[in-house]
Image (cartoon, rainbow over the protein chains, first blue to last red):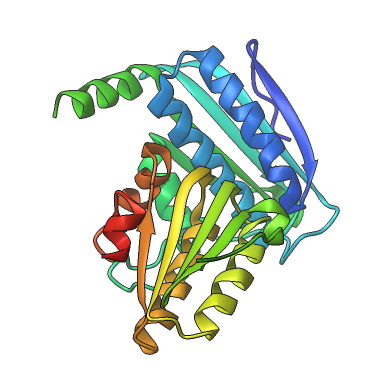
Length: 157
Length: 119
């Protein structure tokens, strides 16, 4: 796991079993609330993290297994402002980030929406291949002010 | 009106009701990668009966991700092929948002109430 300064946050480690997704969603929801995201922001980041974990189980590990997924949620002061940062670390396939993309939304068929949802919700999305083929690290962040402004703008529209 | 209780999908299927030529499938809780498998099975089983109409009531669904969405898209494709009308009912704001993000809110027939979906 890439070491970063995280003074306020939590780390959750699960095995790559779909039954544990609900556990992570609970943790994300509470941590995002504590970090200051509003209800809409909490809902959207919870969805995005669920999608990230689903992609790890399906694509990085090729299906449910006992290998670990680590999720870290931290309050961070980024150069652009205060944010909640989410790290999802897996030890599955190492993939070229350029090849991680969503399907064309006009092509209506089951699946292929996870990356689109993550990128729609988060302000920062970075797929970082780990050295020696040791899986991937997905770094995501949601700015607190942007989340509040977006919600206010939606309420007013 | 026939009524039967189902416990498929790790509890994601709250109830399945049959009214005339329609089947109403009530979902509940979180529909994610874990529970969408059971929902898919129940939906395909219902569609296999080739009713004239299938209504998926999602009033009691708290959360749905793209796995659940994929299940509904597959059901929609099957329903169109066999000319069964498929409608979704009772989408809360949290569930509706994933349809909007994925631009699928205009692909499905989404109704406010069961009676609207059955009319």
